[in-house]
View 1 (cartoon, helix red, strand yellow):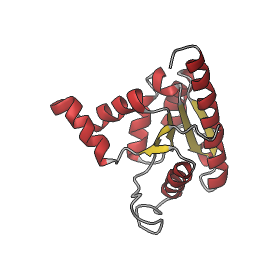
View 2 (tube, one colour):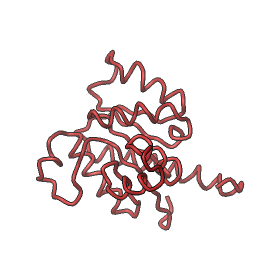
View 3 (cartoon, rainbow, N blue to C red):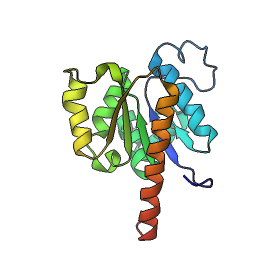
Length: 178
């Protein structure tokens, strides 16, 4: 990725509090929460703008736009489709499972979505692997199984994915479609 290129990323996973340190109970209650916290700051450090579903402004904007029909599903989907360059999902909590279930049905979202599933679930028979993952893959999402313990390895996967996003966006711009 070129130095001047930065992107808007929606980072889904277990609830975290970015205004607190890593020792806060919400930020270190699971491997997935510490990973999401780590990725938030690592991706932000290189200049990307990171959005989380728990962002109050995201909710406020959704309520302004959709009024009484606003809810987390609607305003997250709206924001992702209209303002986000990439989605990185760490399915590991009830909310992130629900988000992913909604997003995989939309090829527009899947085309720029990286789903990282903890390696320990690879090859297991469960609804995520047999349903959501297959649907996401069919709609052109990138699916990776990797140990949530390997934060640097996952950051590397995210950086590679963002380079692919950047390349696609450069081509779209070249052809006047972006």
